[in-house]
Image (cartoon, rainbow, N blue to C red):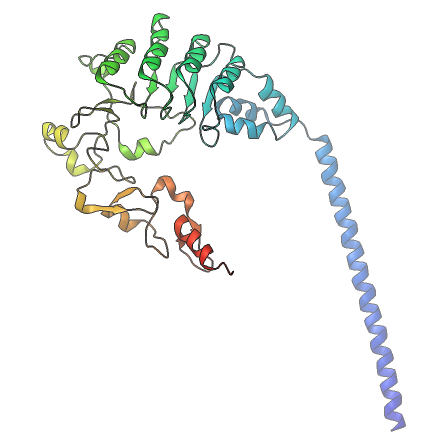
Length: 347
């Protein structure tokens, strides 16, 4: 028994020595790792200390950013902030999320930075802007060739006509004018705008080019999409109202007799329902509802991924609203996501 006990003590001593050796090795490894981390960190700090100003390409990009993007870029570094504060703006595009904050006073202050060099003005759904502020910018920036003011409900047809007339008197014609969403534009207003834009129905070169609904809703170029039309609105051949008039994207419709196609497949989206995904015209019995409340044709509805709960898809324009379901290859729409969060709330 005594021999067994002595053997046990020797084994215990060996194990303790082994564990101490392992601990020393672990400490050595940790110290080595920390030393390497400190070396790497000091190396990065040295690189940051000798890092130069932003790449010159960034300063070129600044002239094409929206106002919101410019404000974000001004917070990146001192060089970009200095460039934005001291550079003369040639583009001014205000859209979400700053559109509802833009007032006449702010727009007039921004116009001081332009120094008459502005060439493109985009006020997208800026509901607080009135005629006086728009005319102030136009009078002080005679080089504007692109004027996009859709959804600016504070503007009047008379104010827009005065703005376009200013360019016309200076022998300067706008290349692109967007006024959709402006209330009370009548046929007589449109005729005056056509005269100032030098648009004549008899001249094929000045006629509005075909426009597809889905391309108009999802422009490929930002911040100001290059429109194929000098002015985005015209008289709808069906309701005789001043609205954006779309062509049909269906191949079968395009093969129809042109006179019948013009009469039945061409019109505003109020008169002819169109798919938000492909832009094709639809009969009322083939309309399907999307999760974003847009209307889709049955073909597009079948091919788009659906929400796991309500089985509704998103169109291309609103696909960013999808929320990936945990443990699933599908997604949740914004409505089902909110409802699922409310369901799991425990009082």
